[in-house]
Structures are given as C-alpha cells and as structure tokens.
Amino acid sequence: MKAKGVIGVFIAWVLIYVIFMFLIWHFKPSQEPFLNPGNLELMMRQGVIVGLGAIGMSYVIMTGGIDLSPGSTIALTTVVVALVLKATNNPILGIGVSVLVGLIAGLINGILVAKLKVGPFIVTLASMLIFRGAAKGFANEQTVGSVPDTWLQVFTASLAKSERWQLIPKGAWVWVILLILMTVILHRTVFGRNVVAIGSNEKTARLCGINVNAVKIGVYAICGVFAGIAGLMQVSRVQIGDPTIAAGDELKMIAAVVIGGGSLLGGEGNLIGAAIGTLIMTTINMGSTQLGISNWIQEIVTGLIIVVAVALDRYRMTRPAKIASA
Image 1: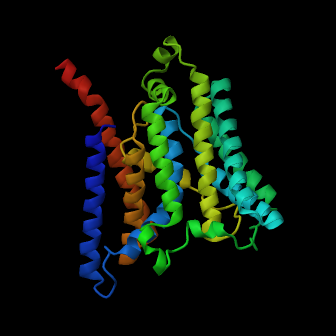
Image 2 (image 1 turned 60 degrees about the vertical axis):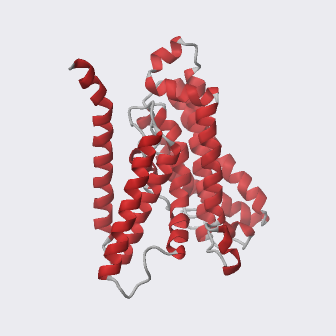
Image 3 (image 1 turned 90 degrees about the horizontal axis):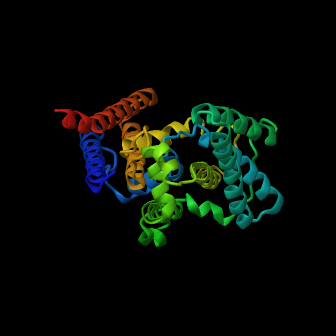
C-alpha cells in the first residue's frame, strides 16, 4: 500500500472522529467533548490488543494466507500467563511465557500450512478450536483468578497526572515501537521483500529461489508471537486468565488489515494502515457507546465498513487490468 493510500485511511479516520465529535456535542451536550486527552488515551488502551494482533495478521495476509486462531491464542496465553504468575509472581517470566506460547501456536500453524499443503483457512480453523480447547483444559474450564499484582498492570493502566507527559499508556508505546520495528523489517529486509513476493505470485517466487515454506512458517510464527503479546496485554487489563476471552478478536484483526488497505488476495498491505484501521474501529465503538447506540448496531456498522473496504480493494486491484484492456 502506497503512502497515498495510508493518507486516505488516515483522513477517513479523522472524518469519522469529527463526525462523532459533532454528534456527541449535539445529542449529548452534558458529556465531555469527544476530543479530549482522556478519550484519546482510552482509545489507545482499547485498541492495543487488536492493534498488536493486526501487525502479525498483516504479515500473514500479505502472503495470501489467513489466520483464524489469534483470538484462541490470546485466550490460551492469558490462562498460561495467569498460572505462571500465580506460581512464581515473576512478571519477567510471564512476558517470556506469553511470547513462547504465541510462538509455539504460530509455528504449529505455519508448519501445518507449509507441509500439509492444506489451505490456511482450514488449518487455522482447526487450530482455533484446538487452542481454545487447550485454554479451557489448562484452566479446568474456569477463569484463573487471584493473579498477584505486578508491574505488568502498568501496560494498560490509565496514566496518572504525573505521567500525562507520556501521552499514551505504556502498552500503547509497546504497540508503536513494535509497529515501527516490523515496518522496517517488512520494507528493509530480504524476508520482508519475500513476504510481498510470495503474496504477489507464489509460483514466481519459487522460481526465483525463495524458500516459500520457510517464509510461510515465519509469518505464522510472527502472527502467533503478536497474539501472545496481545494476550499479555489482556492479562494486564483484566488480571485473570480467561479461556473464553477474545472470541472473535481474529476477525477484528483481519478487519483492521482490510480497512487499512491490505488485500486479502495477498501481495499488498501496510502495517501503519492496519494500525489506523484498528483506530477507526475503536473510534466507532467508543463514539457509538457514548451516544448510547446498541452493540448490535455497532457490529452492523463495522461489518458494512469492512464490506466497503473489501469492495474498494477489489475495485483497486481490477482497475489496472481494465485500463490495460481499454
């Protein structure tokens, strides 16, 4: 996705934000203005989990794949991290475990997709059920509560008055730093170029000597790691391990990638665009909640936005062919 496309998505987010500013000012004058530091901070706190997952999902989608398991990986991570924290009260170990759980989940997906030659939709649909079942098994089909207080809570905690200079919560800074890092990897490394090449034309990529299987395993491993980090943020927020949590989050991640300009056909995408896509969905949810709009209406609106984004992507992908044949 070119810079022009990212700017277009950013402008769309700004317009959506302005619309909610006006609606809340007009219909809910007693509430605080929608544009205030507290709302912007809350937006980043609410968006960090899906935003982190969307980074890994972008890599998978750019290869022409799909991953339906990140929501289940998040749930599994929350359970395992909660159990580890209860047993050791060691937050550093909790961070390591979250990355390890995500990495193992991602490697399982990647190896199955690469070696079995089965469509990623089927593979990750199966792993979604397996990881969710494993989470319920580890948790004995109940939440893992009484997680000890540790400094992990600061990742998703509200900023104190003395911390307002940080602008956004610490977990959001983790999101921003990792977003920059993975953008550099995508655009400045051989691995990143191979990801785009495989999504553009896998057969040509093989003929050019690219180890397609290794790259596919790598992108699913990346997706798993980011789901694991998102699971850590979930523990930071709710302080429990919940095997039922994050159901459907993988769809929000896919939606963020598509809204941000990623193509489900592969070969095109932008991590910054996916981050803005996350903010668009978060803005819609926050603004609708403050207006008192029901959740079911919010879901319909988000779904319609996804349909429009996919339609625009398809139009954009077919337009050059039409021009060439004219």
